[in-house]
Image (tube, rainbow, N blue to C red):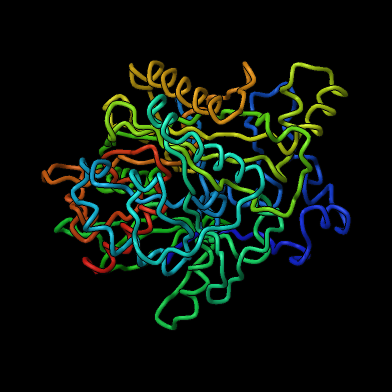
Length: 508
């Protein structure tokens, strides 16, 4: 495995809760906000409700020589051990047959792989109203304990289920998350310390670096870090014969011979490697079309039944409830992750309230236990207007990655309708959505990138087989989101892992 492999530091005092760590850490301001307060979102910015904690800065630290230019897209890259999923919120949602309709496979072909991934990493979940959109597979652990706010929302839904289902088409249930409700191997069960955002100190919340650590225990596995793959070389029969890497420290190049090459660098970087290789071998600048990402809207809400309730930090920090809304058929399903506000940074919420600082701070503290956010996700489709290509070479000889994205013509209509139904559902749950506080995230913010080297039943250029095998270079396999020909509204990490397991078992 060739990897840049940037590493973070271990979380301090793993036995302490969020509040206890604020009191007991040697430098709590530095840990939670950063030595230069880089974790603070300023009032005059158009930033997200959630900033990146300083402890996770390494995940998004770009290597020297890697440059890009974007039009209509705000990409995130990662060269960390484990990649971008080191900062995920652990949502694990299998795709159903309708969502897999454009793929070259069905749910039955993925089911055993979903189960295998769940067995390896630990996924909690149960059969409930969301099962109509998410097939219930084996190897699920019992759900995590609900916080009081989430429990009240679910009780309210159960009391009004029929009316909500009929009026808004929304269904609520437990999200499935890769966070342990009981011990799994060397990892501990969630102890509800409220520190998820800054990095789980017990290893309860799965990240890919856990699997990498397990791989390192096998003598047959060789991990080479500190290098970035730039391109591959071909032999006379258009088979990959070697991979060229560049040291991130010295910028020197090295070459590694290969029998088969599996690219799993993420859609943007894997596509760049393919395009750079074609440019080096043939002098041709190809354009890979069909880039996709999920549009997301963050919808803050206030649960009127929770106002005045005491706040507790002894909870799981991320989403515990989900919302599914069937729009124009299940193919246009809208997915929402409901996060009740717990130990997240409060200043992004405070600064968006229409009051002075003192009043906003008082209001936020008084309603802390009543606050929540729904992360609303919309599906995306492949379109020729959205593409990746390489620009001219820069001074160091590295071409710039160029990214272009244009939203679909019907996106505003779909977003308005989705927002209307989410807001209506929240009202029926006894919640209000403060006007003007919904935040439309820029394209690229969800990091669910896909579509540039799609799997297809038709043997056309720049596509892959159902096993990720390139139709242009037959010993090249693509095992990331590049091969997804459609992007449902759900988080895709779980399906990426299951698809990689399926390819490994069938093609290697």
